[in-house]
Length: 455
Image (cartoon, rainbow, N blue to C red):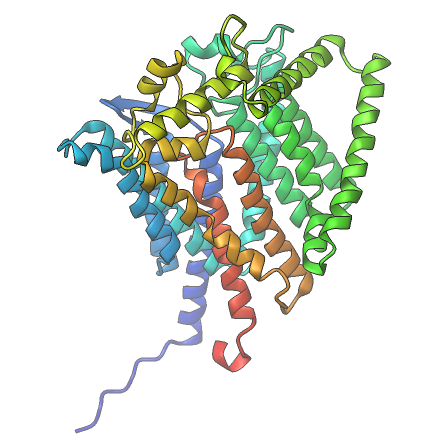
């Protein structure tokens, strides 16, 4: 009895499959980036918010997977999704509240976010230039959003997605609005623009075009008046030398050289301010905001944080410090199972008088999930340790490895810093450093295989 002949794919079939996979991967990466720049809520059902982002994710991502014909689910992303669900749920389950809407809503959102991250990673794996495409897409949207931010700051365009009861919080004493682009929070918009600046520094060739694009993004960040964004933008400009230094073992002298350059730049800014070369009102406002942050830092470092907000003006820096201290106290009171998802605003209001989230992802996760939330943050940074160990790994193209490795490392460092100021545990952007890091590791593994193993 003879075996039936095996079915083989013709060159045309193989070409069609590759084109389909490429189209699906491009759709996954491009749509995921586009979604990050918008924050539009469509419908509120109880504690569940149906947003345009979630709707597009459910509509577009399955199509992308069908076109790619493959769905890659990295173990780290799967573990983080399960730990996040556990952190959301531990407090409720310990009290027998199996169907609390806050827990269910948080878990649905967390699983959707993790699903999107796996689709993004699958797109990276299917595209030879997946990370560069991510960077290009981010820059395109940033160049659209930055002029919108400038127009919003000047009052030419409205703050599209800011609820009416929060408009006052976006106003300043100098007649400018804190721009938000197509999002609702200026700091979140500043983060989007910082990632775009980082993408330009890593992937775009040096020249006038890149300098102009960086200038447009810088003005957009300035329009948000985000201290975090301004500091990170300066850091993004230093990524190239730092990446080369880390790879060659000359990190310390490079850091010292960049620090010296930074001091020169600060001196130049102080001189420009003293000469009145900057608009007086804007100059005074920025100085006031950074001085506020510095005073809070000094108070915390000297052990006087408990007196913040007592008998004085509750500035932005003071409010964040009060929230951070209250979050830490709540965590210490609930170290095992935390307080559960969706309860931080109410408890922080009771403890600190500030009805807000922690504005700190580390503290938000610890407060929400207790030991489970802390475990989430530990697992989150596991790929970073792996990247650092491979910093001197050879690659078929040293320049390509420098770029991908540098992009992955820089994204992780940016988010490690941002976590100190924003609660990102429910935001889909949370997983982008992990997806990029895993894709970078995968590219290195494939590149180092013998040619016969890849044939």
